[in-house]
Image (cartoon, rainbow, N blue to C red; front, side, top):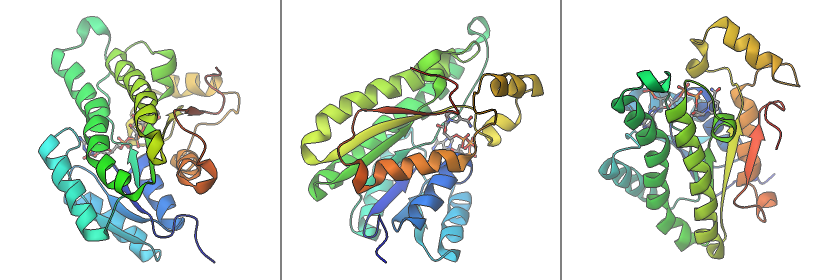
Length: 249
Ligand code: NAP
């Protein structure tokens, strides 16, 4: 049976662990060849090896997404190795949480650089090969925090809200080439990013979640798989909350 994403080439940023890794594994299951990005070669190669062990196609594509030259070289390398690029998932993200009065300029810059500038650089680099293919799927991993705000996360909320505006703008720019651009706003997902948060915060998140469970990386991966499918070909510029009902709009 022909798989949904057979013949497609995907690049997933920050895919060595957590949500990005689940997305990379799922897109590979759906038949895409996956370029696994992360900051360093070794962890990216480990995810690629996991995909290969499951019978999929993948390779490591290490780069810092906030470094323009590194991103260009990475995308060139992926196109050379796999012969094109059809899917980009801007997933790499970091937090530097603190109240605004204590927030240092470097906390602001680091979060904006990875979460927002990273998506700008990667999207800019992949647009040409996607336009050439006259088919593309870009999925940006935002956050409920970009919709609702959160005390102690002004930098992160600004980056994720920026990513939402970016999503809608590029959806308008790229639509005529059959390239869709959508975002997912995850709620509280169990990964390394959230594992260090105090138990009281987990409990509070649980209480604010009508479905009464915390999210898993696979919940986000399933939504990404849908946005990348042919079935989602008439959906662009949309922000899908995958949060157990935490934020209803
Ligand atoms: P995670 O477990 O911390 O994983 C993030 C991955 O991104 C790590 O492998 C990290 O590599 C990599 N990375 C960081 N900076 C990078 C850079 N400059 N270039 C390339 N890769 C980089 O985080 P996660 O929870 O899976 O989150 C993934 C995305 O979902 C993020 O955008 C996050 O903001 C978003 N999100 C998460 C949640 C949640 O509850 N977990 C909720 C809403 C949105 P290193 O290990 O080397 O740093």
